[in-house]
Image (cartoon, rainbow, N blue to C red):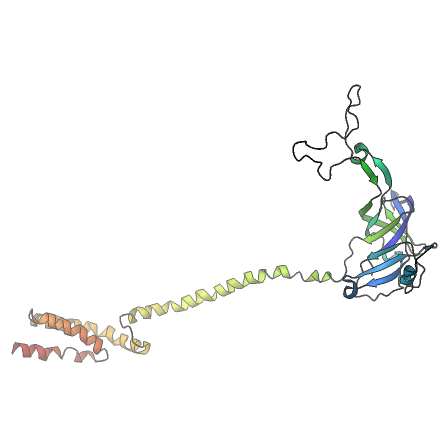
Length: 333
């Protein structure tokens, strides 16, 4: 499908809708248009169709290069050539024709043409300046007035509204509604006015036309992608508290194992249990031994006691009190 057609403005008239309301319309002879050349990205750098407007009176004096350019399409040289976008997936070749039936009633179109030329005009007609007083003695009526400063920038800025050529410019009127499309007579009726005088050539384009290449914009899940990473972090956070809860009982065991550093975990677990039950029995034994010992023996016993738990953690508790007793008796003897 092609984006639009070439047409020629016939004039304006009016029609009536179902309720009897008057609708001003512009009648345009649109098409048939023949494909003169098909441009591709590989050869020309962009894709487009070059259409020629078929008329009864074509180009009267075409040049030889122009005749050769039209030879593939099989039509005589036309007066007007224009390029339009098209959908590349559809098979189109030189010589194919498009008619006014590509437009449907209710479609929105954009009409491009050359506006009427109105010659050299002043600022009041061209730009709508208000002008000065019309009373006697005013001396300022339709002049443009000051056009810039003298000190800075000491020049007239670009774009200043001044008298000059009015009209005869390329103008686009957007979002006009198609009222009727007559395939038999190649007539297109559009609501409202279009630029140019009667007989001027126009380009009628579909306002909502999109080639299929940009349509892959359907991949709008792209805005959803940022949502997925937002959902992922909470999932990663959930296992973290679970692991912390699982690790909480471990510190309780670690507290009991802290005094015994530098030893394998298996030995700690086995030894922690007997140590908890044994200190209760050792306390009374120590109390009994302390009154028997003299003041001189106490520092020696204190030095010997811390050395024994380091070297003999695996010995049973019964063997610990036995070695100091013979040493004390010898000293007394």
